[in-house]
Image (tube, rainbow, N blue to C red; front, side):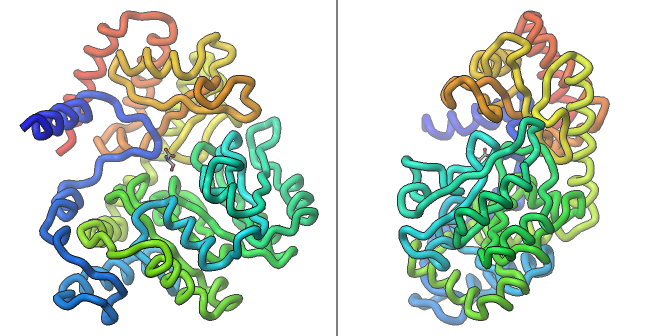
Length: 405
Ligand code: DSN
């Protein structure tokens, strides 16, 4: 069958190339097996103990394990594990807490935010709400003073603190103070950094935000999926917030949960509770810092001049190549990245001035700081015009030394 052949080819591609897209990772075999299990056959609209279909005895147990594991991992009292992915999770939070036309305030996409954080005109969050956007300053860091002034002026109902291409630590106490001062809800979208948060290598928003969303497939290394979590602070402010969130997910936005996904989430959350996972997440950051340092030594300009987390945003303007062209060259050499806007990018999003790279997937392969330096050398050689075939051969050899199962 042609599809089976293409799946095999994709497996081979993933094995033989360096996956440097910071939102991608290799999910463990048990997670992938759960995804294609017979749980896929079952309808389970509703929640454990309150389903609209019979035959959900085991599905209930699985969903409860996923919920309890997430509560323990993130230190929160209420979790919904049914959102299909990150965008539906954020939409469910808005549906639970906002009315159409309410004001929302999120980080601009061009400053490292996400489409669902109020990106204007073309997105659900930008069309159905009055959306306002804050930005990073000239130094590439979120300008909290400017955000505070803007929040006081706009008075949004919700402040969204979350990022997709921001290489620095998020200052939760500052976000919380800004949102609390204007009586706004604080939503922390930790999709990119969830694995780092559970390992303690990035501060947790659990004491500061009212609601936390995260995808489960990035640094958390699970299946595609999402969690919506209500914190103690959130329940103090809105005692029925958990119920509201659950009702927004089902029946508000979704029908039956994807049970195979729920089981895969449960497995990955249990793995994330182990000491091994904490070591893994620490290594992600060590690798990212080593890669950033080596790239700087080769004269690459990094937005914010470095990284605190799993990702690096390279400003290519001094190298006189656009992000897309460089990403294509790197792909020819077996290095997979994505082109990305840099703050205040003079070029359009479809052909921006930067690339975004990250270390979650290479760390899953077992690579450490020495390999991060080798990868920086590969990237530099591609930029300098070394033959992509030469680099490709070396990339393949490196990947072979660090196999994935
Ligand atoms: N598309 C994801 C990323 O690459 O960061 C965010 O949703």
